[in-house]
Length: 103
Image (cartoon, rainbow, N blue to C red; front, side, top):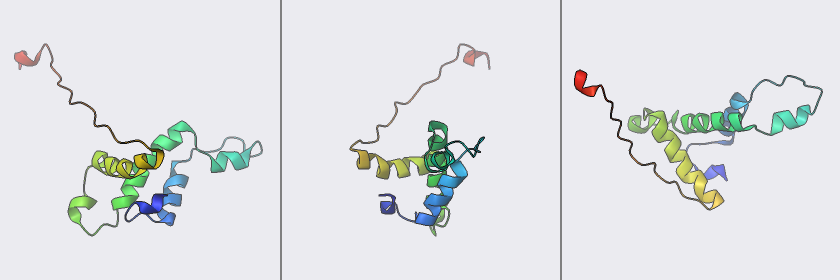
């Protein structure tokens, strides 16, 4: 599944997964489940870590030093089709402040 993402090895995926996990408070209660399944905040933490590990060893400096949001978008472009979805770009947001004229 994730082997379709260039430069993302199984070792990098496991590292990203383990670094995204929160400490387990009670290791005696359902500990195996706590170590093998992710909670929502852990999953959200996983996405930028996968994106970082995808490009950390890249030879191309333009890709290696992309901003994190672009790296995440690149990874999501690979992941969304796996669930039959496509990435929808958010609309541009124009921020207008009442006090802009004061400066």
